[in-house]
Length: 270
Image 1 (cartoon, rainbow, N blue to C red):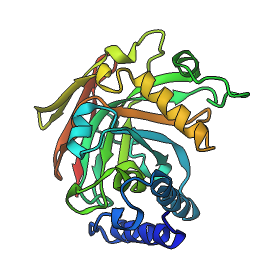
Image 2: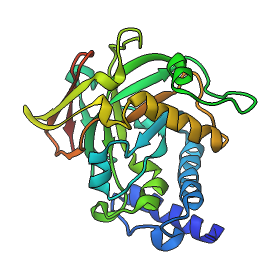
Image 3: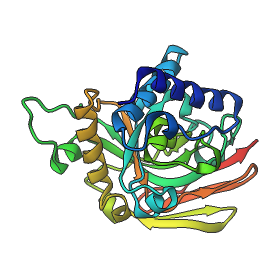
Image 4: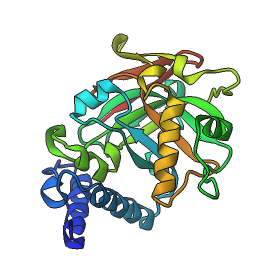
């Protein structure tokens, strides 16, 4: 069993990597490769430290939902992390009005996703099943999103517990403003093309995200409820990549075109 001292050491290692922007060694030497409870305890330690520093939870992200990303990461199951308000760089980035700073990032990659904003809590009483119909009914609006994933661990040499501990390899995110009701959009049917400086670098479909982004949302709702921290009304949910993530560099212009939405674009600066 992983000790509290080992969990604290992992939190410190990842925190120092973020603060210094110098990637660190994996934390699986401290928490093992199979102890998911310890990995999520490290994640909680990181998130609570950021909340203590003034950040606010605004939602959740689901990671490793597509086979392409699982293959890139060398994992075989999804995970989840927290979205904080200081990760949201949507203002000014939408439509490329301003560039987004890479100052907080270490080894960033970008991916196109469908995001959801919840109108209702997903917190069924009396052990009721969390179904696709239940989560669909909880969605207020779907939005296009770019997630900038990042790793505090050198060379992205991660195992599953490493990425879980590292807040599911979270970095920044951009969400569009042209939302769609699920009456007008079927998330599993969307197509996505992601270009960098006009060259397509990634593509995929809604079906690549656990078969359906709504199934990814259902999976997350089950996990969040099980962990005692259910999804709440107003939360933003990044449902997971629709295609492989790709690296980018300062000066690059990234555009995600997801069917049903206006293109979402951002330019990055150092």
